[in-house]
Image (cartoon, rainbow, N blue to C red; front, top):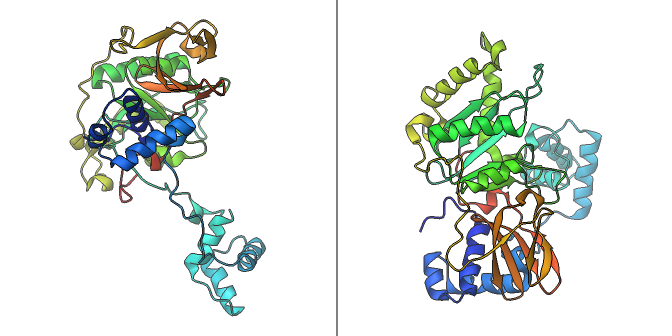
Length: 389
């Protein structure tokens, strides 16, 4: 079974739900391609800690006996502060003169660990790069900054994660939800609907004024069966492909006629060149168009209520964003007002799902509701270290 379109968290949640219903652990482990000890570990952690217990955990060792001595780290920090424009190579030479030789790479690691890398040499790389297996399993979406232009915002960019195909480059003139939805509807009608979309914490798909972040726009996407993910806070590398595309767009602005780059006709011409003419190194010099095909999932402008399956416990979210479980009121999200959600009872915990996404977790013992984080980080995805962003 391929899990290229699912994040680690989602498939682990699905596993513990099915295991808690009484399905065979051995059968589930074969289906999810994990060992039985791993399956029992996921189930035990969920029973003890809830969804947070089955998050991907760091494999960093607890102890580092070979780590640079604290006094030496302090000396490296002092030299860097005295000479902030000097890199690790020059600082290593100073240490060598002081009869404390260290490899350049060690000096650089110490600087990074201490947060003293300020220049391009310290650009944060993704811990683990990822790439979906097939087209339309994940689209990355973001607004480009307008830079020095008079417009308040640049175009809306929608990029296929697998093929780097630029599905859309649309000038909206603002980040207004209605304008963005109108452009996306056009893209969905022409290209079909993706399995999932990845966005940052910006409008209109995220609300900083809402405790759960959901917006009418993101709910609209989820009603199409699209799994919505958001990049980690201050972690633009998660959206590395669309960020890199914006860099390519910036470099194209030195061309004659690029002063009209905010006009839709200029954007359409650039999009055609990017998809059909420009070779891409990460695609072995093929064009994105040669690696992409439209989605077979059709857009429905008025989708019916989500089918949670026979026997599912369904609740309607009231006008204040609450549902009732065990005759008690629990907050879910005001953005989901009038929408149906399903609840999964797992011993002393209750998972709340909207469409095909878990959105919150109720702990009946501690009487607390916790939002299920939909942030996506590279280490939470299938991929390999040598996949280019």
